Amino acid sequence: MTVAAKRKPAKGQGRPFRDGVFDRELEDLPQELRWREWMGRIEAVLFASASAVSREDLARVVGQGASVEMLIDDIQAELVGRPYELAQVAGKWMFRTKTQFAEAIKAAADLGDQSLSFTEMEMGVLCAIAYHQPIDWAGLKEIFGKEVSRDLLARLRFIHLIASGPRSPRPGAPHTFATTATFLATFDLQTLRDLPELELSTSSVAIVGDV
Image 1 (cartoon, rainbow, N blue to C red):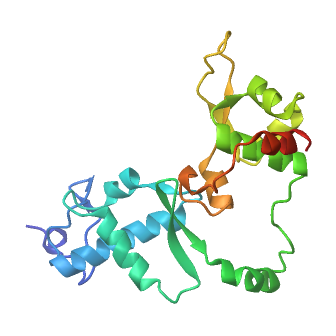
Image 2 (cartoon, rainbow, N blue to C red; image 1 turned 180 degrees about the vertical axis):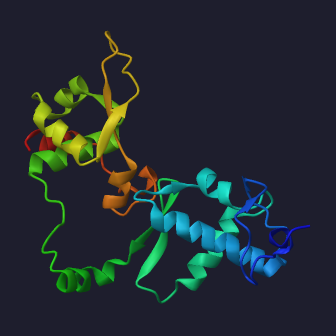
């Protein structure tokens, strides 16, 4: 047996690879240290990701019997009182700074006002898509009583607030529009069920049509 073969991982550290394969189970660690390592792996994946990460992806770095939800609960408990949080967006997970620290971040980094701004028409179209998705171009025309600018739709797509939905059942099966996970994160929603309720009356439709 070689010296290298006898070497053991340092206390508190698991071996990321075992025989060339990523070691998810970490069976050579005591349970408490194994749990801490799994928490660290989930945090590392989330910090490294530019977008929200699904439960399925997080499960790839922890043991088969480990509960991703319980690991996330423990991470969230440790973040109480910290300026950032682990938030669920559209069924996925991401780190984000808490809203009460937005002004401090802007002041320290001299970021200026980087909040998204919308024209009334852009916001109206975004709301129409959010509440009626999946909806095609003709469906938007029916709501507004006029054609919606393709340039406007392209801008909403460019900033990742809308994307292509399933094909419409209308003749020709036109493309439809739907909101995205970025839309949910931008407006601080976890799911579309968190959208405020609308009274779908004739008057409300008329107001939207006049935008």
